[in-house]
Image (cartoon, rainbow, N blue to C red; front, side):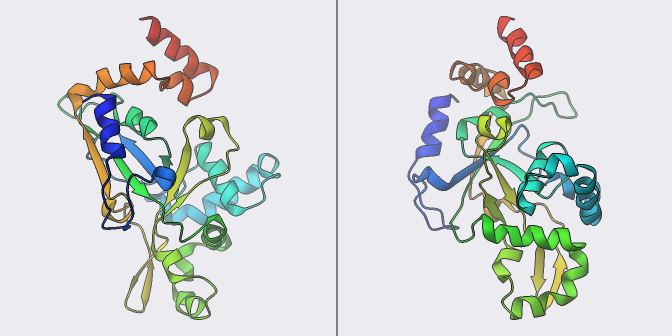
Length: 260
């Protein structure tokens, strides 16, 4: 595989049966690269049973980092900043740049046998049904109290049309404000998994990894044997550690690798 053949996959005209759109319209396309095709699409909050502490994590972080967050205007903006600085959240990093997703899919990763793993790039599409103002409602839910405690009152909330049912039960792509160097460098965006699951009239908190067919109808396997050559080719196009992580440590690490 080469970068050119990969881009042929990106730009190939096809119809997504999930979103019913022409895939060659990339204005609202989002990508995510995994160095191992077996990894789940799981936000950090969903790992190690952190989900039950979500409300407490957010409240503690916002109280402790009040000075750093004082100029933020929305719950969503605060959530993005906390995610950026390492707090476990329900946001999953994605990118609007398919070459950046390819870079992350090509990173070195060994399995239990010491063998390099195949990577994968996922491609999804935002249909425009909900904007960041709608997503803010979800963030308000999370901040007000532990989401699991709201389950019993959700039927009344939805019935009163205070919040749309699809907003709570579907995954959503979020295009964030470009207020950090890393988000700018990586064409950063986020994927928000469903907050709740509904079965009949019963609501429960969603704790499952994202289903690829629901949010990423396209995927491209990156063969393990092609990873190194692809990374070298991407470096010639300016896609490397020094540009994607715009801090001095990563720039120096890239210089040392490039000289070698």
